[in-house]
Image 1 (cartoon, rainbow, N blue to C red):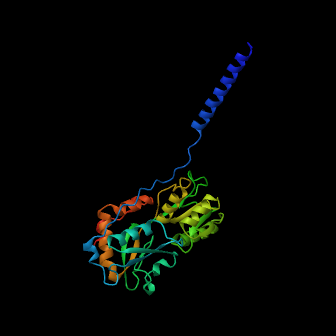
Image 2: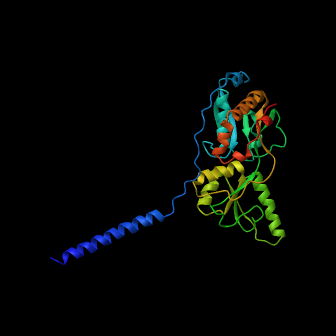
Image 3: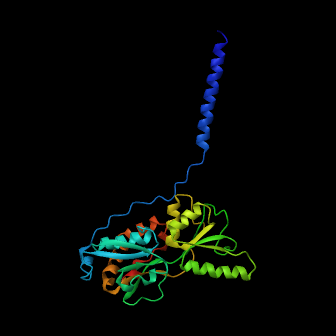
Length: 286
């Protein structure tokens, strides 16, 4: 009977030690990535003065907005900006995700009222006007820490995802020619359908990096939920264009200026890591 007390004491000490060790292990385990915390979208109310600028065919109806991507429904900064423009004008937004090659022709056949592009528009389409909405930049998306050391000048030999038909698809293809000329390993160029497709491939280790316009890159980082990042600042020059049917230009221009003035525009850009690429309200006003 006397020997059972110490045994019980040893057992209790061992149990307590196990609990302590378990607690220590939990305390030192790395926390899961939390990703980008997106703030809620601000409420956007219609402005009667701006609604009055709408052409008769649009008043009280739907604003058809072409945005990048092939996802249904369309998502991302362009879709959110298009929805905010529609709300300010008392309209219902109808976003339509279309390919990079089709976006510049968004107004053809009167299929859309507005097309929001992530790249500069060299020339306004027939029947349309180009409004500035964002600094046009290219960005690189990789896993955190950029383990494969992919930089704008070191694409050779890497598996690089690009949105099919995009400006980055063309520039990376051109860069690949320089790789061959300099006897360096070729770039494995992987065309993808958009930010959603690129995110899936990056997380599945099918790509080493995604080279895209800044909105698509920010979109991918948000979708990555802490498992993707932009290791370096976006690069390039120019201003991304929003093409607008001439009949709707006065209303859309005024609505965009209004969203910039009240902070809605900045809030949308911040949600997709684009805050540093905002245009000044003076650039939008006529």
